[in-house]
Amino acid sequence: MGYFNSESVERPYSSGWLVRVNNGVAEVVINRPPLNIITLEMRMDLGGIINELEQDNNVRVVVFEGSGDKAFSAGGDVTEFLNTTPNDLINWGKTIEAVENLSKPTIALLRGYVLGAGTELALACDIRIGTPDVEIGLPEIRLGMVPASGGLTRIVKSLGPLRAKYYLLLGRRIKPEEALQLGLLHEVVESARIYDRVMEIARDLMSLSPLAIKALKEAIKLIQDSPMGIGFDIERKTFALLRYSQDFQEGIEAFKEKRQPRFQGL
Image (tube, rainbow, N blue to C red; front, side, top):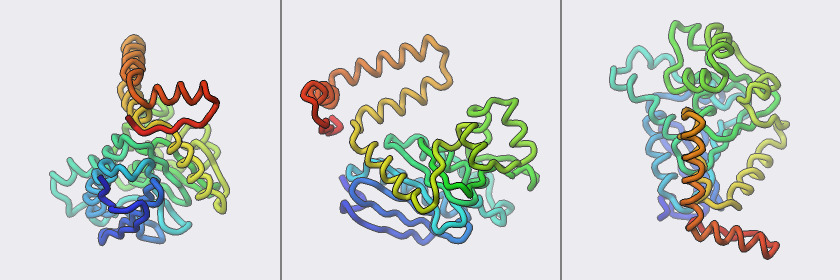
């Protein structure tokens, strides 16, 4: 099944997204430069985009990025906030949850401002690579509000409540070296090299078993809030299920034959 109909295709969305698929890598671009503000319409469209990418067998890795060099995204369109309905407010974070629930590995390519909804989207990705000018933050408190698209929960769970309070209560922006120490960034790469580095990581991920990656992501999600004993049980059962896959057998055979495995996701 291929919702994007080709191994190489580019599809713009009127709301402000641009999706490029090339050789198994889908680039989901926030295409509203210079600040790449995320509107409510974009949030609604993102759910459909994620669903298509989930179902598309041509797509193996998904990269999220912003158009231009100034910002991944400086946040949501705050001018819309007073015009939203209760249903909007309840549901608008669910599309960002869908990013985290995507069974395929996701990478956030971060430049410049990564604020508010931009931070929430980046934290929903599996891997985050940033440039030296990145500024990460959830400044909602300075507008009399709180993060509500997963950012508040993810920061507290990632940093613990004692550290999280410092950044959330002050709406403090986090520079790259500090973000690395906190685990909010995984690598900092010069701007001229970051795209190539992200694609290098994407190719590495594509060489792995998509079945094992899907199972691993699900196991991590279940284990992160589980007691140790339940975590041990989840990992053993995940291993046991993969044991009977063709990819598992291929991995062992390739190791014995000293060659690169050819995983099929079966």
